[in-house]
Amino acid sequence: MGDKQKAHIVIFAEGDTDKVFFDALLNYYRKNSQKPICSCEVRNLQGVSRYTSKVSGKLTNEICPNARKKGMEVKAVCCSYDTDVFEFSERPVVDWNKVKREVKRIGIKEFCQIRVESMMEDWLLEDLQGLCSFLKLNSVPTIIGKNGHAKIQQLFRKANKVYLKGQSVKTFLDKLDIRLIRDKRIKALSELELLLNVELKNKP
Image 1 (cartoon, rainbow, N blue to C red):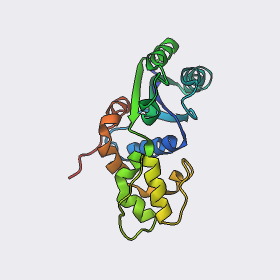
Image 2 (image 1 turned 90 degrees about the vertical axis):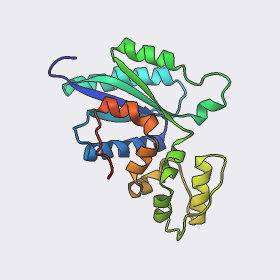
Image 3 (image 1 turned 60 degrees about the horizontal axis):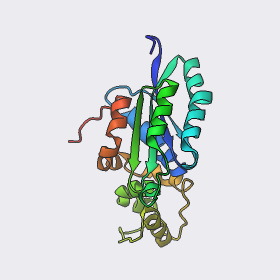
Image 4 (image 1 turned 180 degrees about the vertical axis):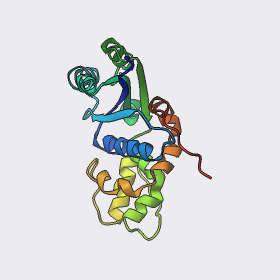
């Protein structure tokens, strides 16, 4: 990387809900990190089909050329994925070694995976109190469901609302405690924070 080129990081998200969350997380980092974080953007791949070719195409044709025009160089690629897509598949949905090789072939040195267990809705439910407050529920109910998506759907129904992936998240994410979610999912986010140069003040 040239002396005048600033580092740029790309997060690939597999869907709308994940993109909305990671955009919000980056804004939180920018506002609260004790040190300036690296330049970063989130790209939505709209699913895991043709994963490697979509990542390669976006990097080669759009992201890397645009970064160079701004005096930056892509130094890292982070791939976020909901683990539920992979847990019950007999064959790997995505060959991560192939993705990593392709990223390195393009000339990007760092590659990391962000495991969202089991799906982004499970992360959002870490601030159940905040979600209930948004829905104007007087108390935090007991919710059951086969996964986070089913649980949030049930929660919305209790408030006579309909939960739509991606679209609904935009309406309530700013009401949630991002730091709380981050702290509970730090294991999955630690490598990303290291790449971004994030340094958050410890809570008292």
